[in-house]
Image (tube, rainbow, N blue to C red; front, side, top):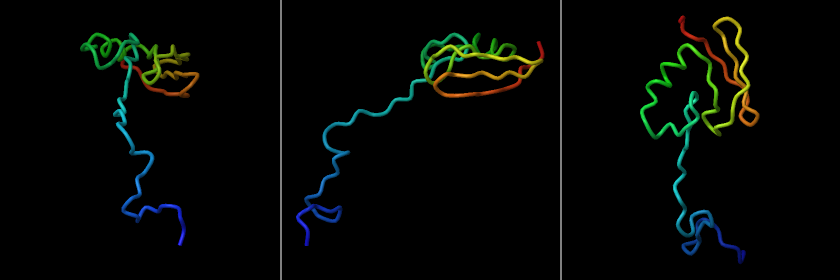
Length: 90
């Protein structure tokens, strides 16, 4: 028998659940204007993104490096990597 608590012990408490743990809130940003996607309607932004590649990373709000070939685009965030897509005909 060990003096260390195990998960089966009634007195065991997981250190990850002690105290109040704030909820994880996923903050996303608009790929066109860079503002919080949770605030405002961004209708004009969504319309603009149909014909233009994104400008901002939706995860960290960094400005993207964008390569455009015809209607195909590739955007690179320094932290989150590469994303790609196809633009609608203007």
